Amino acid sequence: MNNFEKYNELREKFPEFIFKGFDYEDTGEELHITYNFSVPGLSDFAPDWRIPKSREMGYIEDEIDENITFQNMIFNLGMIELVSYYKIACPKNVIIDVPGALAYIDEDALFWWKEQYFYGLGEFFYTNEIPLDKEGFMNISFGERASMGADKLKGHSRYADVYDYNEIKRDSKRFMIPVGGGKDSAVTLELLKEYKKDSYCYMINGRGATFATAAAADFDGEHVIVAKRSLDKRMLDLNKAGYLNGHTPFSAMTAFSCILVGYMYGLPYVALSNESSANESTVEGSTVNHQYSKSFEFEHDFVTYEEKYIKSGVKYFSLLRPWSEYQIAREFAKHEQYFCIFRSCNVGSKEDKWCGHCAKCLFVYYILSPFIDADEMVKIFGKNLLGDESLWELTRELTGMVSQKPFECVGSRSEVNIAISETIAKFEREGRPLPVLLAKYKDTPLYKPYREEENPYINYFETRNNVPEFLIGLLK
Image (tube, rainbow, N blue to C red):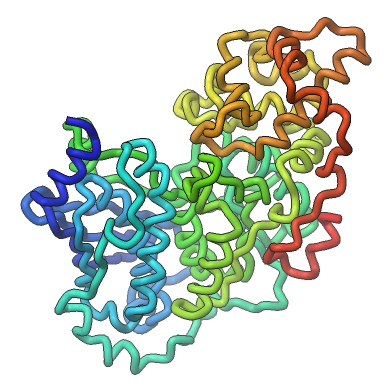
């Protein structure tokens, strides 16, 4: 049975996915949130989040009980969390049966969510060979309990009283900076270093590279927020048993959690590190984009939704949106303190290393090579990736010799071609012999036009961005 046949069979057998509710508890040290999802006839799921409290926060559970804005953010985080569990069987009907849900969103919002699920699952559908069906893949509706208590909740001001510890002042230039451990967040930390004193790094399930990056940027433990997200073991067991599995929009999860955590800590700005290159589709000529939830399209939609339905007062934007990956690499190369600690490889993430065999490792190697000494590059990655002929097929995918890019967070096809062409020129200026990947690329029809054309990324600036005006000067 292929995956499309399995998809249809599972949808017939399990026609409903229900978001039943959420619970929260102040444990004294953290806010503990548990979500309740169900696929009737298959399993219930109870994933959870643990968000640490700052020293200044008192007991907040009673405040949450009276604060519709706070509850709304918890509910909306659940709306994006559910997609990881929905994909197990892809039921035809998603039912939002959370008591009081109609106080948070309306029918128009359900349409918004359906679009986010569709585009966010684009890679999942494509890699599982499930035809894209924007209209028919899901019906989403409210259950009977969605109206329970909604009028009472609506009786509270949507701009509920914000307690002293989490007062958001727009004129306060305090930032929460999500850190993933790669070069992009390191660049954002450096660009915002003048605001470091009153800002925080934010991590979801922090690991070696994320902690090391924060330390290299001189953030102490008091200014590092580590949220812990736990997956339900029953979902993992079903994945192992052969149920449907694949990519979900993790960056959208980050967005909704950032708003909640920023609100808790009274931080008016969340500064992401997503670049303009994320807008390019992974499969040429389609809407399938591994980086959809890092794209400006998602950012714009998210900001519009947040301002209409949540109204937290927290401004979410990507500081690096005006730049390309090429420009980010050029800036990163100025900050040697990160060279030996940054990591972007998903394959090697658990061991906090570069695997040296995947598309992400190869892309980062290519995009940095014009700016960092060749010997230093070998030290960073532990091997010379440009000398590994087994990576030639990945090179073809990264440069557009084939229509599908790797399903990884990589730069645009043109940026990779320019970076490779410039690296070849650099090797030749230094009198170095060309490693095998550079030599093979030089023999392709791509080399000459990219070598001869003017580099469009030298002073590139994407005008479609949400960067606050007072920060624009950092990027020009």
